[in-house]
Image 1 (cartoon, rainbow, N blue to C red):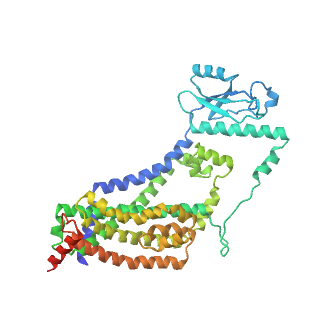
Image 2: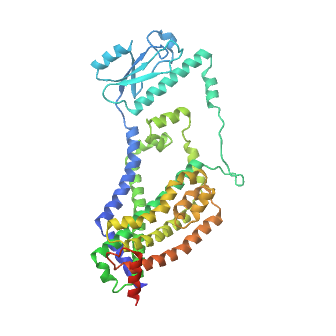
Image 3: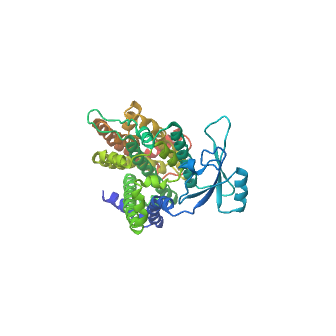
Length: 455
């Protein structure tokens, strides 16, 4: 046991002292904080006002052939984003655009004799593509003016239209026994995040184990080490030591990211105060995008209070312990296998060959993620969450949706039973291969050599 602790200490201190460890530890929180703050800053910073010329052949959108009294609110309204100016024709608008550098685009509304209401419009630009916010504003005003014209034509008041458009049936999904709403969107996002975290951790830190074994083997340092430490002790010390390095780095990422976010918000109170007034940071981060525009028009934008309610409804008391268990045992299970693969490898080409079979089970879960999310209680989802080599990712994808307690315990028991078996098998491979170079090509030749050595 003391020798394993010495190997753990060596692996931990060697990697923690590396410059690359600290660079990655410091850069990742900065990048995460930047991903959070930059979209908000770009969305809320003051933008230059652009000029759009409106050439309306139909006259429906405040064209020049209608008098001011009949226009009312059926005209484009200039704002802080876009200033609208009317042009008599498309040709005239083009001549103005050629001479006036302030004009950024021309909105041309076509008129066809077969159409009482125009259904086609084009936003022309000359050199610079109009910003998404400009296109969003033009589209919103087109829909507003067309709606007002239709309301006037059919004699519908604004209150009546608000009643019609605001009346809809909200379909909810609830558990009959508990009466709790499903909040499928929130649970799907949480399951994807948790499962991807485990997937990334397994392969990032597991590959470090494999590379460490290959480096020691190729440099012949391992020949000196195994003179005083058994191969099994060396393997377990390496696996646990790198696990502690990964855990240290993960905890530092969480703390430093939190400090960076608090610092950014404290230094830009006005900016993030404006973000909070708009109810959703995610909505602001994507403000001006075509996706947000379409969602806003259709009224499908997620309600932030409902999202918060969905997060509050999740049983984190059960999710956090399960995440820690599958995070630790998933890493330990695969790290021992990666160590065995590294012991059988002499170079990077061999590591890719031996690590390919190890990646297949979890890659299969990634490919089947849509199926698992669509039917978290289906037979395939249950099977993947019980098989030890796929359960760390598959179970965390299912747990936010609610998993019977017996399935969670059975999955944990199976991975606990499988881990010693894999460790024993990996230790046998590790001890047989750690000192070998240029292994013989065929299994019969390798077996014959093993028998000769035993004699």
